[in-house]
Image (cartoon, rainbow, N blue to C red; front, side, top):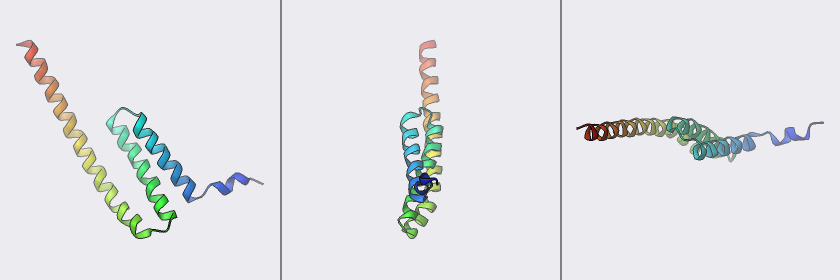
Length: 96
């Protein structure tokens, strides 16, 4: 009755998540929005690995993905601090 229900399985949903995440990373400007899209991309990637039945690799990816996301967030905050200091120091140069 509904032939499109056959297309909804782990592989296609995971591929869709990965494509949405990749497109979001490319199109969005704010770094925090990119981190959210990176989480979607990682979810799709882990889903595709599970669909291919590489469960040990999926487990390692599931462990390391949050760690890499935290490191990425720390880097984003440091870069923002450096940019703010640079803008502030340039503003003080012109005032003096």
